[in-house]
Length: 226
Image (tube, rainbow, N blue to C red; front, side):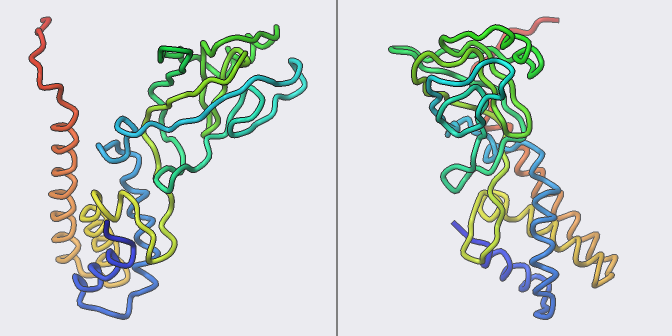
């Protein structure tokens, strides 16, 4: 997989300039922010769900349940995982495992779960809510329950030249042309090259959208309901 250093080198080659090292480094995370809130096949957990195990425990209602990554409590911080995941942008689905079967946990609001905890309850997970990368489960788990969490995620930031993630790989050209557009706008101030980079970026974005659509198709015809 190409890394951050490879992406920087390609942008230098495109610019035919070697005096914008700092500007390139600053523009890459900005370009990623421009596009990471759009869902593509590579920033969706469908093939690789986020996993966590919740365990029995917790305090009395009103005392403040522990926030943790897999110990006791009702609220869990979804910590960066495996070098590929930084945080969720949107959670679509939570599945829990009880002996012999995976089942779907119902989505609810944070306030509704707070209300439900007016009476302490233990059992298998039945409801979940999510806020700012914190997952809240109701009721308190009566035993250890593995969870599989699916959704749209943000990749870890690129810091060192050896770092790599989905944006240096599948999204590489989109980020490359977005950075070029930014740099040609400022500090270079070349309107013609801005337009060229923008057109190249639109082609890269169109490809990623079409590929995402292709991968999401089921391959089965469905009935039309007019």
